[in-house]
Amino acid sequence: MATFPPEREEDFAPFVPEEILRRGLAYFKEGRVRRLFRVGEKLLGEVQGSEPTPYRVEVGPGLVGHCTCPYPGFPCKHAVALLYAHLEGKAPDLAPLIEALTPEEAKGLLKRLALLPEVGLLLAEALAPGEAFLAGVRALRQAFRLGEGEEEARRLLLRLDRAGRKEVEAFLEALPLAPFDPEPYLRAALARYLELSPRLSFLLSLHRRHPSEGVREAFLRRALEEPERALGLLQGREVRGLRAELLFRLGRVEEALGVLREGLEGVEDYLHLVERFLALGRVEEALKYAEEARDWFGKDPRLLPLLDLLVAHRGRPEDHRARFAVRPNLEDYLALKAKLGRAFAEERQALLRQVKDPALLARIHLLEEDWKALDRLLKGAPPEAYPRLAEALEERLPEEAGRLYQEAARLAAEKGTRKAYREAASLLLRLARLDPKAAKGAALALVLAYPRRPALREELAPLLD
Image (cartoon, rainbow, N blue to C red):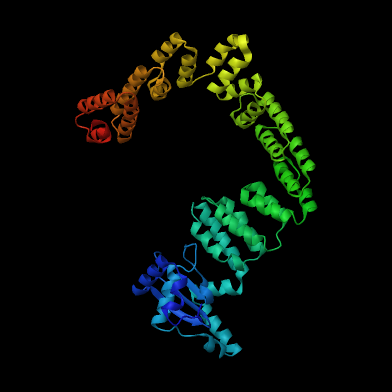
């Protein structure tokens, strides 16, 4: 890039996205640049944006700088507006004037400037950045109590590179209290914290209060530098998983597995251990603990991944039975029927009682050609089950499926909403795959039944052509 500040538009335009360049030029043409001056190779100024208070902008060589606006990238349109303003009328360079001041004159000038509230705040940030940052954190906590604070959090992020360890810790402690998702801010603050000789004990305390993935990773990164000290801190049930993860990353696999075995209390603990065994290629051990979890926790839906594993690798009747109890399905029903042989008859009714889905029951009755049971099911089925029942019957009983589609479409149209009309049209389109003539007739009947509903006619139009 050419010497900075730029002498012509071509000195910076190729390095700025076209949309940002266009909007920045528009801001300059609208007279939004309120103040502009130069200190050596840096341009500084204020640009009026969408907020009442103008944004403060600083641009230096390489188009590096910052702006108090919320735009995540740089340069933003405000910085571009400042550059165009400089081209229009060269900004006065304050550097020679500052250098010409005697020490006493400089002190006097600073004291006078400090009496101006806006300048005084900037001087406080420059001369006592730590105290100013902590004051910003206190303001942030107050904003959180009022259900706000995102703007204050953004402003503190802009000053993170000048904050010390104490200040960043205060910021990190405040962020979990945010009434919005704090993760983007936490990650940025943690990245800065890891540059500042971070304290393991602080990161662990933060993890206990806010166990997010970002905090967890920050702790582990720091822990790898002082593993024994970190392991000494990781005591207690709530950080057992963190201790095991650190041991895995240190290559101490058996120790890590031992920690996970000691902590087997709930379904999640078993899931984590089995997942680790599978990652290590130790399938038999994974299956052993999957079986143990199955025997302990029975019908807990969280067991499904472990039950899938057992079915895929062993497929014993007890595995199919356990998975069917958690999630009734045709695959396990048929597997039990094949594996149990004559003994299946004694278990069949108990299995069917576990099925709450009418469509699944219909598929089972069709496969077994239990027409009486299917007839009872269809007569007692609730209207909301009609679409899925019809889908189950399409291949073997297309006429009955068509009747269910028509009835479901009629009930949907009665609701009188655009969404319901769209649902009715979708149901009749399914019917059209089975019987185009019946689908068109049903659509026409609905339009005639509700002549003052143009939205219904509009949704059914593809069926009426």
